Length: 357
Image (cartoon, rainbow, N blue to C red):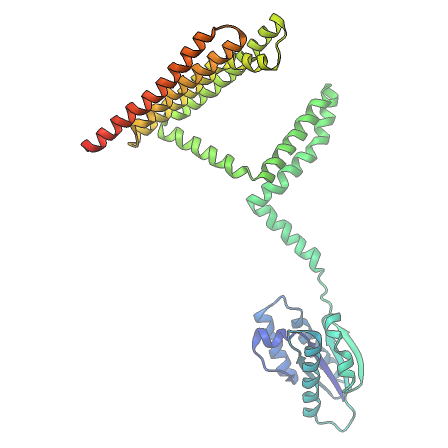
């Protein structure tokens, strides 16, 4: 008599379906296979059980055949092999046969085949049948993975955008060579890829998206700070240019040292930088007032900016020899008084208004 023995060493059948094992009989094994397929269609043991049923139907034409499914446990090879051995003994005791029982083992891989010596100690084994699914799982899953990537906007932008830029470099380089500008195109292309990789690596895309959202909201709500930020950016650029221009003038006058270089940069740019800071602070104060969140202490900002700008401008002028020590002391004293008096004044005003409310 021939016994087709389906082996599930890690007991996927019992754990996922609750079907008691061993499973003996063609209809019982087929029912167990359907139950496991419903519980987990991707489990390879489903194919083992159906292959056992198929072998039973094929081989039963020539001789008497029985089919059964045995399982182990999901903890270690030794315990699993012992569990399989006990279930094989139970199956052999159930089968009524005058002839010696010979076994065809059906498994889904090398791990389950480790139990072959245990089975061979109970009955002779005619063959070991390993079930291999015809579909190339890696290739098939690759197709669906690529399809999913194409349908996912975030993943699509992460992978396809830099890939597309890289693929465009060669035709752009050919076109640039034809026009006599190969270096510019390659530089721009590599800069785009580098900036994209930098933004993705540092996670700056969320910050950029948040900035764009805030700018859009500012446009829709009419916030003054949007205009003041643009004006401040222009003033900063002008201040940088003026600082470099002042540095060139100082160099032309006599070749300054390191201290004079810093002083020249501050002397030429600090007025414009102060104007940029005053612009943004006034815009912020206006928005706070329009939103009903105004506090009197907010008015300290313009006075602080003016005092700091005056001090830095005078100090840099002193190191360049444009002002005397007495003038420097006067500006330092005035800057200190302005900041202290503004702080005290607005603090008193705010406290008085709080008490009146």
